[in-house]
Amino acid sequence: MSQPLLFRNVEVDGGPVDVRVERGLVSRICDSGRGDVEAAQVIDGVGGALLPGLVDHHVHLLATAAARASVDVSGPSGLADLSDLAGEGWVRAVGARHELTKDDLDAVSRDRPIRVQHRSGALWTLNSAGLDAVSRSGGPRSLTRRQKETGQLWRADDQLRTLLPSSGLPDLVSLGRDLLTRGVTAVSDATPALDAAARTVLGDALPQRIMSMGDAGDGPRKVVVADHELPPLNTLVSTFVDVHRAGRAVALHCVTRESLVLAVVALREAGSHPGDRIEHAAVCDDDVAALMADLGVVVVTQPSLVRQRGDDYLADCAPQDRPWLWRHAGLLAAGVPVALSSDAPYGDVDPWRAIATAVDRTTISGAVLGADEGVSPLRALNAMLTPPDDPGGRPRTIREGVAADLCLLARPLAHMLADPASTMVAATVIGGEVLFRRPGWACASDPPG
Ligand SMILES: [Zn+2]
Image (cartoon, rainbow, N blue to C red; front, side, top):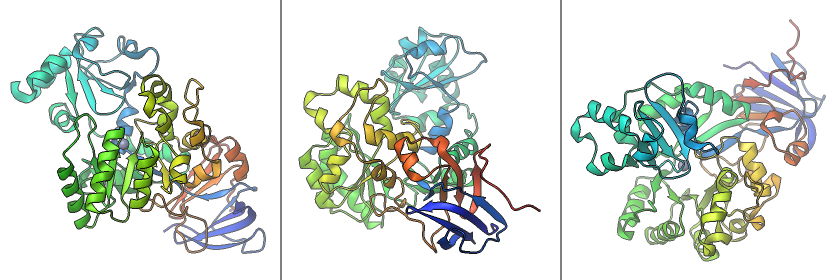
């Protein structure tokens, strides 16, 4: 059980207060200097804001941890980064900007097995050495003829897992620590195939509170509406009805105009359920937004993808889709609640950069994608403070009796919102325990003795 903890002189709702934490809960809030001064642990906030911990409403934890141990080929040098890697055995790379083939990777190396993931997450490409290694481990029939010819394995994570040598678990502990340094205290894992065993592994390794959208999860159930091969309407309707009957909401992955329209029409047919949500809604015009508002669904969107891929969208997307990309303000105006998330590893894990991009809508090159879709910094922050099980609902606040999942900033909130940056997170608390303090942050102090 955590020791009583006292935050002195922190900013909550604009005022300087002291906040006492006991048994994992916020137990008392009073004007600064007016309440008890004794506690096992005292943190002097010197006027920095104390916020509820941030929630990443859509992330893939295992894939994010694995990506941190992979070569990122999304940069301008691309596959060239793979050609002279030290070591031996499999090379794992992520972030490919194009749908690669075996030949592309054979040009890098014919000897060392390589696998590269497309940045969408839907495609792995293997070189000839990689295909040979997989065939050896799984037998000649382990790959289809088409897979052997092209080196392309589409949506084949489960197949690959059985064919590749187990490299053990990725480093989830350091991912959890990284999220703490950014003030994240809860995450919603959006991986459909996350089973109960993997869910347990995540819970053991990460300090954050975790909700799973997996088949065996406790949150809404993720349904991928595959845009490259749209499912029949009836199939979707009966899937939604079944999920709802089992007492769960649906979380619908929709990244094209067509898949979103189909999902919304199917949901109307099936009837919506509290907690139903749309992931991404990357292309959404006003008519579809109005239908979503009627259904009461929430959109969980990713400003990090505006930043990282916005330049490509501007260059490649159909002109008629351009006004409707990765909307935020327009959805709110239509009556559709919006929550923010990272979609890491496909987007940047940093929530503060997501908040900055939700405001300025600026891509890496400095272009602006949908200036009208920007929201105020406070609205963007609030979209990461809503509860995991109610992503479009009321932002959590700090009051007596709530769980002590907290993010202390080194400065007042107005400073952070003017220029959001993770480096301004001074401490992170989950369930009343201080799990992160920024090294060198001088204002944190324990009572002597
Ligand atoms: Zn995702």
